[in-house]
Image 1 (spheres, rainbow over the protein chains, first blue to last red):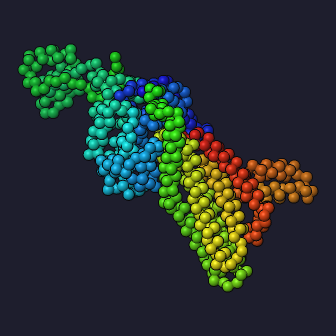
Image 2: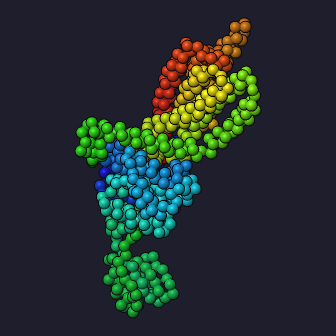
Image 3: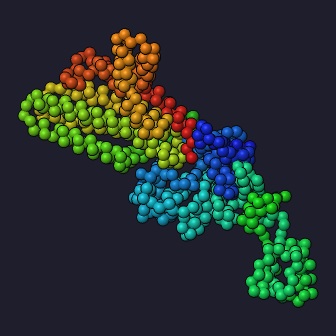
Length: 302
Length: 292
């Protein structure tokens, strides 16, 4: 569906200014039907990567192919593409309804009033449809952006920080909507800082650091990271074995992690010392743990 | 994948039907963009303020003479009011082009357009057409007002009014095209300065001055270079009224000779070439910009 190979993107804001490398050999592949998440720190190059995939930025070097074509601004390729920008740079002089209708009509097809009203109603925008975007809150503008993505059956949807500015209820509804769209077969590429959200939605993740994809894998692989730990909670009156890591003490209780190969040693320790064991469960690293480990260079994928 | 993406145009359609669908789609896109632009013009506070100030000024100057009861006064009033309204139209037409393009570029809202199947060429064309449409509408209103006054005052100047109206409309198209180009190239303030000050008439006057100094016997080489430079700049700078030395008499006397109509056609030809040139250059500049 999407293929980016060794993409470099350099910016120079002025003639005499220093060149900034936004992308530094970025390569990634998105398969049809993926819910693909781009994760990275601020300034890692996520948005630049998305702009390159969208064809809004022409890479300094490298190749980008979307559905077998090189994306160009306004090309017929966009007939099956949807895009929700990070910043609400919309047509502020239009009302909510006018903007939704305008963006929908840019696909060259007529959209019925009923469809537009239903979409606005679904997003809770019906009562604000005559309000100009200039007077709308950031969240409302974001919902207009979501509305224009929902009005068309798209094969590929680009979402740049989609839940930014949305209230918690809207976030949950939007998440459900995304799941529905994905289940209908739409490939989704999403940029987000909210790792818990990515954990709930994505099936594949690329971690970008300094303009380069450092890890690209199935989310399930990133969550385990090949080193399963056991999370243990026990009464620690005396010494704590040195293989118990990340120990947190709350009164006499101690919480920590033990590697799988030390499980039997730990059991022996609790039995021989008569230490009451309250909890022992398999610990899987969250995406946040994996992200932190990869970015800090503390972990790597097999 | 390629075939699926291309399939939008080809699945289940013959070549003719695909072409028809494309045309229909282009017209739909043009209509959608133009409607959005009209909404911008309706709601732009700057344009509204400009319109209001000018109409107030014109009204204050024109209203008292309307109550005079003399044929000569009536003629002078009509001539002066019509001239000032047409000048206003030219400024306003430039404003239409300047504001709509600069506003979209500065708001960065074009990424919402270009990430849809709407090409920059089509969007730019729609801004040009929408500005021309508004200019035409205002032109018709001004012409109708002048015609009404000429009918009320029994002044036989209707042919000249039509001539001036057509000439002004063509000039407004040239201004729209020129400012469209300048706004895509430079900051709107610089674009306005270039259009208002550094235009063909300035270079013509400058060249006239340099040439007269050289002819008066000043042997300075720098002046000779300046003379040549101003001449080149005068030839390069777009002209609003390309044949104003031939038609300026019509503006003052409100009389048109039979042979004067050819200048409308000449102006139309010049403006068409200028518009195409400005459009293509503006499109090139728009494509070079980053819409992120």
